[in-house]
Length: 85
Image (cartoon, one colour):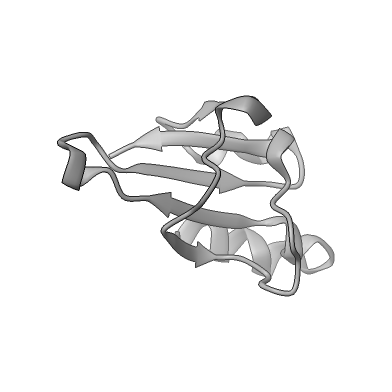
């Protein structure tokens, strides 16, 4: 999350496009899922261990919004990547 905050500060015109959300799966015996959204694919080099996902792979609901402009209604699905923790 620190990397996203740093990128937001370095790119103030795009701050609304940096997001991080989580889906809790521990109660089902699975790993939690973390998703980040960035305005451009060139920012993905900052995030080892995350893999791109398509819109159909995204969860319908997020349990935790860790970083986002909460005035937006929809997350930029095409730019989200996932990491299992």
